[in-house]
Image 1 (cartoon, helix red, strand yellow):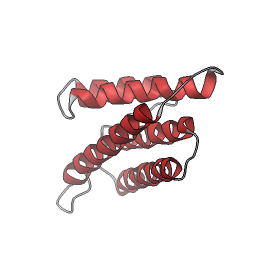
Image 2 (cartoon, helix red, strand yellow; image 1 turned 90 degrees about the vertical axis):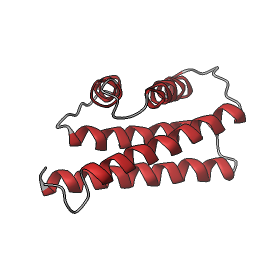
Image 3 (spheres, helix red, strand yellow; image 1 turned 180 degrees about the vertical axis):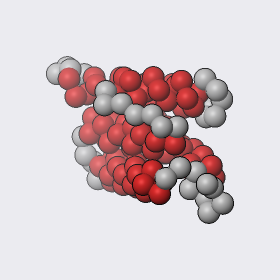
Image 4 (cartoon, helix red, strand yellow; image 1 turned 30 degrees about the vertical axis):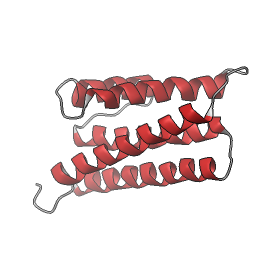
Length: 138
């Protein structure tokens, strides 16, 4: 892995963490629940982009990024299957909130998505730090 790739992974993980913090802040400050879900999903999305860099993959469309995540990290058992379910569900909810005018969301579901995002980012970060960002990696 090149130094440029490591730097980009670290940047994407930083964006995932900052976006997750934004989601939490919106939630605790009474922001729109749909905005909270949007930020939580994007935290997961940035973490996936970091993961894909580690396998030399990437895409511009969200559906393709998610498919590549499933192919390279879930199917081979690198990350647990529930991470895929969380990502898919958060993506669906984010789209519903962004594009449907009559969508309804409650605080319980929002808290659930926040927890998914928190755990997802933690697992992605742990994997990348131990396998690609440690000092003894090539």
